[in-house]
Image: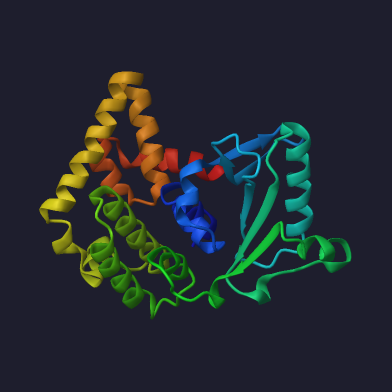
Length: 272
């Protein structure tokens, strides 16, 4: 399961969840953009950046790392990339580093070189197995590390929560699609139809509200096409849908692209 892709899709579609994880107000997401940046000296890319969209110098920028496998080089790489980024972009906002682990035993601290840095208030380490399910967003994050056996039950609870708590049909649809995608990754031997039945989604997807949300998504793609040209707009819209974690068959229905074309764009995101 490509956990980093799942998390970056989650933060792209629902940036408020990131701010919940670091115990900030979800409304902080309103003045941030989740993006990536290339650092030219070594031709590498920082895939997880929350950059302020305001000139308020008190707002930090966040560099986010998702690490689900032991890696002795993580902190060497992370802080090298951070300080090269600072040198190149000379941002006026203070930095904050956030590292997300499934559990403490995955972390390799390298205290000889980084012990004091890791104790700074600028560095936040999150261990998902120690989080309580305090909100819908945190629950979706915890779904990523749930066992295959327990994941479907948690997913059903989260879908029920989404139906109760979310009033925006499009946001609700996108979040439910993301929950479904996580289960697809966790249960690769199950068919899409089996997973829909397991999560109780078959009836939900036939409801008027869900269908209207689908039409809204299609309308957004058409409007974008008038402004940028149909081919480029379709490509951009497809990339947005891929970053939400929506399944490929649904994207094909939205965009009328072939699965091969969508898989090529998916690969482009993963390699960027």
